[in-house]
Image 1: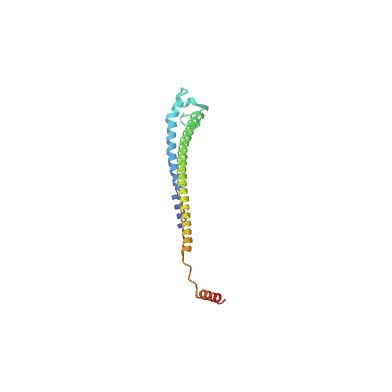
Image 2: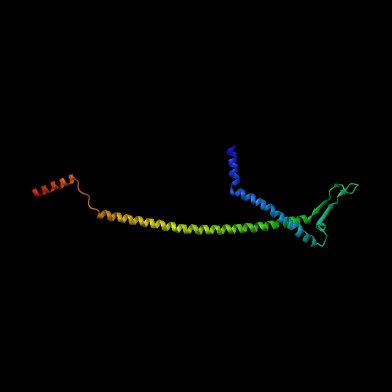
Length: 177
């Protein structure tokens, strides 16, 4: 059970899950704004264009409603094609799509700038890295040259007793001849 809750906690605290939740909340609020704009501003303007009152000019009634004898209770609903509602839905879609386009375009622009800055940073770091490697290689060459000079300047190792005796023997042989 602990493992389950640990996994759930990891899932919830991931950045993209929280971003998605914020996006859904903001999207819902944005949808309310767009719907209000279309319903309260654009739809009245569209209904005003044909010169009719209300949406009746943008509707086609295929069948009138059938009422009971009390003229209040509806037995059969009216069958109406509501072009105004379709136009409102299309306008809502277009406004939403346009705003989303602007948001995505802005995010992509920011992302492209961020990638450009990262690439410039990488190039600078790569240049510094190459310079550091070259400096290390140069220092290694200098150390190697110093070691070679040290080897040349170092006194010859002292001969061993056996080497001295062999040299004396050789000299005595050469003198006896």
